[in-house]
Length: 86
Picture (cartoon, rainbow, N blue to C red):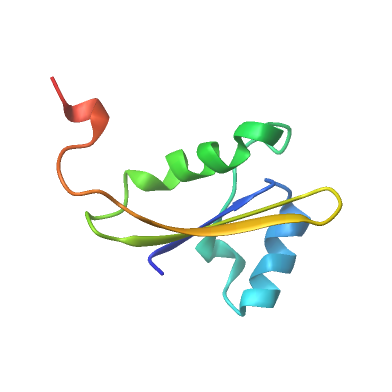
């Protein structure tokens, strides 16, 4: 994976996930504000997407209260980024 994006944006969650995935915590991006909640995954992806070349695979991981968890693979699209389009 070229990037791992996770939510929620809690430092403890990021550290625990890094341990479970056996990767340095620095490889996992979370939202800058841990209070974002619902938009946390999108905010974390936004922090990373500009640094990824087209075609880069990204692992998205989210967890919530109770037994709520999900994961998906995302691939950085080819072509201009939406903010580069006229």
